[in-house]
Length: 290
Image (tube, rainbow, N blue to C red):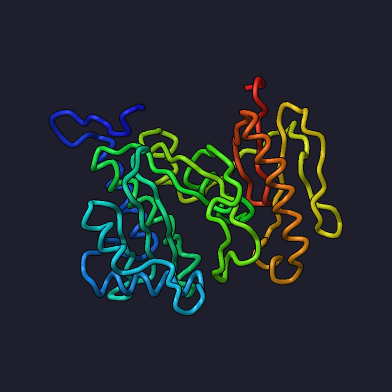
């Protein structure tokens, strides 16, 4: 297995310094200060924030104070974004074979739209590089369009594997009743494209002109499967799967099944996701055509 650490020689490398500067810029732009959590009260506030975001059943907290204490004490990443003295964002990751696995992140609903999640990830990158780690992995629901755009287009992460029902049955308010398929992504922290993404204020994903629709939506919002033998394919997801789950759960489940079959099948066959657009389309290059 390749060593996930970067060798920085006798001093702090240019890439580490640049990552720290990018983190400072992202925090200024979003109006927060990000720091590692270390006290019981901070851990409890982080648990409360994550429960407000995910809405687990009473008596089943999403994560516990004791677990956060253990992560922090073992040297993992447990960070919070503060506006004055108020905690409004949390990001938690633990050390792994790849380098760092970012397990969960959440932002207070009242503070969304300010790029606080972006600032947390840019801070996480700087933290990892300072510790000679060059890769972060995490998972996300590939049906959630805004998260796909954030991860693939805005951060420059790379889709690595489609994981059907990765977490099993989930009963929190965000995931209940819809399965837990996830897309595993890798963030190569020393990649110049990632470094550039971390300082850009605007992100525009290129659209391949020759992409053929392998999955699209019909006039009623139902998934429509297309041919999969083209060089480049587009794979659409709903614009707001979370609203669709509440209003039309059977349709939402149909999208889950279709995306698992098509995007999951393409990735299992060696295809590569090359981008994601704001209008909700993955672009995929088939194996042998790259």
